[in-house]
View 1 (spheres, rainbow, N blue to C red):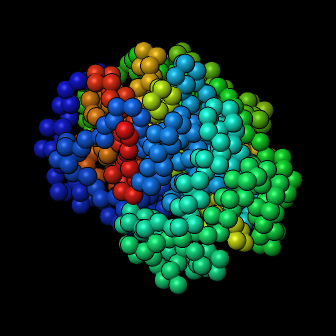
View 2 (tube, rainbow, N blue to C red; view 1 turned 45 degrees about the vertical axis):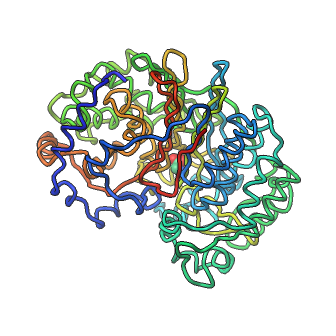
View 3 (cartoon, protein in one colour; view 1 turned 90 degrees about the vertical axis):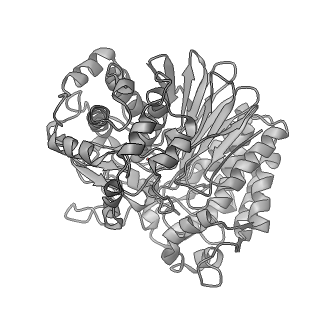
Length: 591
Ligand code: GLY
């Protein structure tokens, strides 16, 4: 917290004119993918933001996108479980109460900071099926066929979540699987009462639920959309979770669950096989880390681009006086856009699954290299994205949800896992009860052709059998002087990187508390398209005009992401939890 006095608060209240709010419209939304959006979010006002306060707790804290899942995590911690026990319990609970995004039909990443100082990274990202090919989404003329990677069984990657949860619990948990999965089974079997935040998310794809009888049977109420106060029961999912409770990961990867997914895939033109499930594996690795003014960022290495890209942006930004310039100021916004533009060009050019490609992370983050990148930023002019190429030259050779847990011992866990779109591919295999992912769309369907997040990626992320698609998921832990400072992360596809970055900068540079930092309006720039997404309230009309005069192109978007963060306040020692206002079903809870 370099800037102890949040001067931005007073300035921003004065600056937030009605015209700024009016600038965004629903038609502006179509350019950012639906799965990155949360239509439930009301724009914040700067006056509301000034008053936003985190939930505080003395011992332990859980923040997730659904209040019942957060409560499950707190209960496990109160029963004596550690942060990993709670993270696994929350992971399974979200699979029930946050079915759009919490998942056993997808995959993700976990970053762990142990109280003894060790930092760990667990990769349980989906893998491409063994029959996948680089051109599987193209027609005979080489054109990408719309919807093939997102709306069909060909878009489904081999799920990793069940093995990820199993690996984390076996290595660092202290409780048996039966204890941590029990609350999820109960929530699925007994059902839970839907609140407005839950309904808003269901409504995002309610029309699609009617397309498949097995989906409609659970996610429509006798053919009609659920409304607030209805109880959502998921007996089929309860049965699947009971199979996992009894048989562990084996039940999922070698038993009837895999057989049902493979049968449904084969019946509907997919390519998943029992061998895909039997061969699936998870990986423990070293996190990517970097320093920023006394903070250490501990984040995700490839196959996530998150840690590398966040670190590269921060290294570019390091010498600039962001705190002095202030949140939303022309100079801060210009510099952040330019740093993101350059880092995303590198992301899309050089990063991929480390089991298949060499990721030049040391080079990308070396101080000399970052200084050279920084030197290309003009203080008063935007650099068109068309003039930016990957900074290392040609390549050599060849809705999601996030949650954070801190326990009473000082262990911390950050998890982001996903089925990609809200409700993934929109299909459930037979009576398994869980939505399957459409994560294959995160690959490069064809070099130079944008995926559904608009990311224009290269050959390095091309589809290959058994490969993991490059991700932007960035569950991140920040240390200060070696001690736990922040746990943060978000859903939102490519916007995850800027959302996670900004939640940190808003505290470290702009003097916000944790709640303000996740609630504050955001910006996002990803190299291509040459367009900066902004949430209402970030820019005054005057600041926007000035930045446009410098060559920046803005697209107003109502909202995106859902940062679920915890801060250890160095002054009080208290844990400060912040559920993102954009995901009102969520909760920060502690004791
Ligand atoms: N599916 C979004 C991501 O992993 O980046």
